[in-house]
Image (cartoon, rainbow, N blue to C red):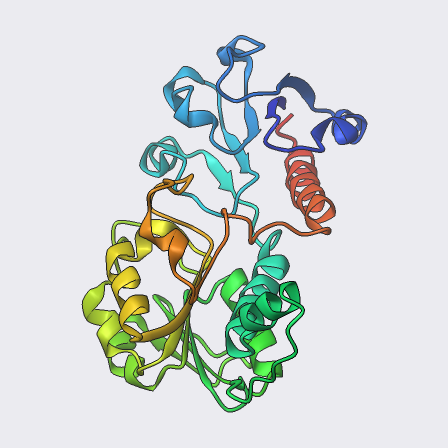
Length: 305
């Protein structure tokens, strides 16, 4: 297969010998916005992230296989890909472990008031705080029970939490106490102490956590968004944090990225704000390489070179 590989796969060049040994030919584009290094009519497979934001899918008449370096599918023309019968693979499972660890870390920081102790450490101030919370016995709802959500479920379950899953396609899974359809979301929110968003961004999920749903949450709940910024109403989250309706939030993704310097979110003390960084983990490179090479091996076995 004639492959166009972009620099979105940071360690790609280290694996060129393995890919070529499988019988594939490679053209490499370091920056996805740059001119293509080959005739697009030559390309049969692409490994990329946001390539189609800069080069239209229609430019590749022989394209039949796409491997994304991201888990999300919101940066590719899904309808066009499906209409053309192109096989699409994402980076499912690659980033799930660090994202789940990040979610747990953020919630624990809020429960244990880590910012209070950090401030006192910088002041050399010895002051006890007897108002720390606990995760044990709390109800955690995970909206989106794919790979990331299920890794979150396993870790919060280990902390002694009750785990509710909400998904378009509920199923039996030992990591969850119950998994419910999306239609039951409003009914469970009043019992939720921690709401973790792990669902993909689609027309149906855009703005799914709005002001009305935030008011349904148990008073003092914690919100975690490691999905995509537009699944929540940022202004409503800001107001809920200011009023105390939410005791805290962990936001790693935003409607506009980078987050504008004048956003009021920056100054909220009960918010842990990070720059779309929850995916980062030491094992990502190995997991992504395994995922990509697995797909290329499948192509070789199919005889689609």
